[in-house]
Amino acid sequence: MSVFLVTGASTGIGLAAARCLRAAGETVVGISRSGREGTEVADLSTEEGVREAVAIARRHGPIRGLVLNAATGSANDGTVAELTPADWRETMAINLDSPFLTLREAWSDLISDGAGRIVMVSSTAATLGAPGMTAYSTSKAGLLGMMRVVAQDGAPHGLTCNAVLPGWVRTEMSERSAAATAAETGQTVAEVWADRNAGYAAGRVVEPEEVGDVIAFLCSRAASGVSGEEIRVALGDVW
Image 1: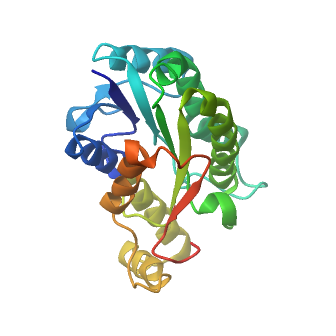
Image 2 (image 1 turned 180 degrees about the horizontal axis):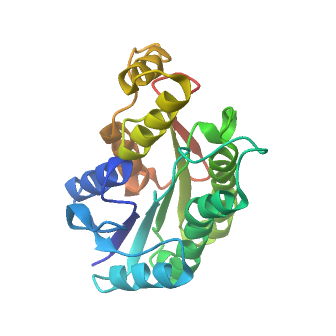
Image 3 (image 1 turned 30 degrees about the vertical axis):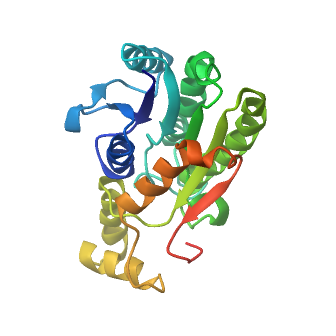
């Protein structure tokens, strides 16, 4: 029995992806820092923590797929002049180093059965940027570069690698971002979310389950011909 390892699986997109994969009949091992929602606990910002997470997943079987979702948001981000080196390094450790380390540790499993699947959770901020999102936008753009290379390196082994680029999704991470924006602008959190909703022609932001469904498709055998792609999940809008 093979398994899917989902990082950042206790909330938001990671939790939705884990649920969608289970609904499709897959065995899922979720990893988080909190241990909520039945996830295993590991600190994915360190090499030791990544090795521990992969070892936990392997107890359930060889790893056929990865959903690389664990991330820190933009609540502590800033302009180049404002952002501290410590905050920059923390964002890169979680958003960019961790996916690389997880891929490296699980690689032998992923290429073993000719049908491995990798989905990286990036962001519309990777292609558009935003004022004051120096570290976040950079890290999410870096994921796209990694995804394209892994898609090429994995192709001879039947391995696919894609990225989803959600717009605003109402999750714990984006709630922290909304609170930070509210503090900076003098708005209420509700007003911040109203502005975000109004930014979409649909009049609402994306639901975590909508991203989870796309991830589950990309992890399926039906998506064997899709690799190296950036799939925007933003209700038809650019942001």
